Image (tube, rainbow, N blue to C red; front, top):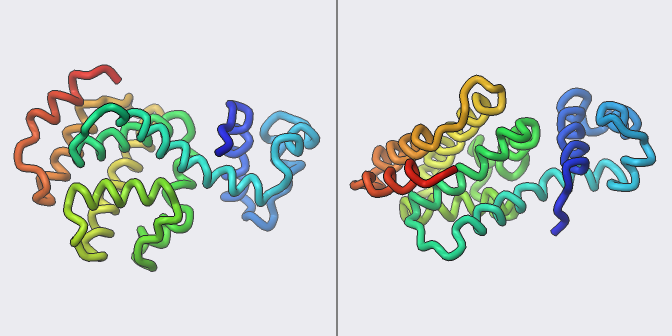
Length: 206
């Protein structure tokens, strides 16, 4: 899998912003390069065209998955702890690149599942990991509608909190996020005793 440096991530982020502004069909790589502060030739040396740019943006979801898995390596986290760890990785990304995370939250197949149009499509690594985590938390036998409801509640909080962090309105606070995920799990009947989990995530350094 390709890992993109700061310049590559800048191009991807600007591309997403331009697609939102003018649409994919009207995206101009010349205009994109100008908005990214580089020449068209420099952009083409990194990306061959619009299709590769869009694929690169979608692949960042896999990078988030790998980062979350790396943080869990050597640990035996409970399903609830896995949810908190995954959420923290996503919130850290939100703080660095709001446009990119907005794209990942709305892109197919995530957007279609969120809207209830389709059953889970696990071709998106990030969606698959999120659903696997929720399955472990609430049980694999949960029906599709309940699964979607749980997914929407958890994702909506992460996205809303992420937007506040990205806009500079609030700093990320581990205690707030861990407490919110604990309450979410308790309300759904998946967690009875959360004190030990809170201790772990509130006290360990970010």
